[in-house]
Length: 106
Image (cartoon, rainbow, N blue to C red; front, side, top):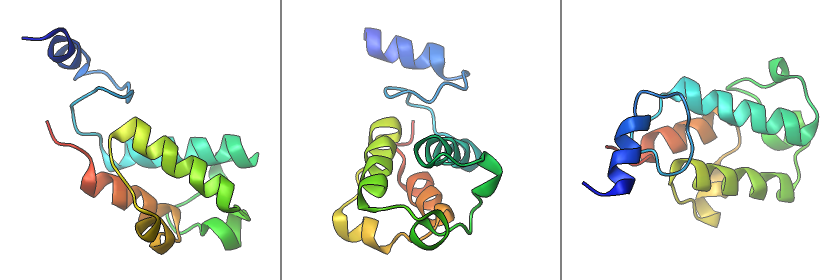
């Protein structure tokens, strides 16, 4: 077993969602990560972000904010999102579902 595999196995029960963890993450954990990222970047209270929150209309997020979120999701969860796919994601819930459905499975 490689050192990376051993590390992933040891972290499987952890709530740490850092890159390299092979265990699938729950939708709630993904939502929390997205909400926390948006709250910090846009200086919002976490309670202001829900599944139905629209990035542009409700959060006044610009293209740079959205680009940073996509990079964060790709790096954290090992998913890849094209510009076309990103353009179709209008709400927080859609972003969470995108990651949840495409995250690498162990």
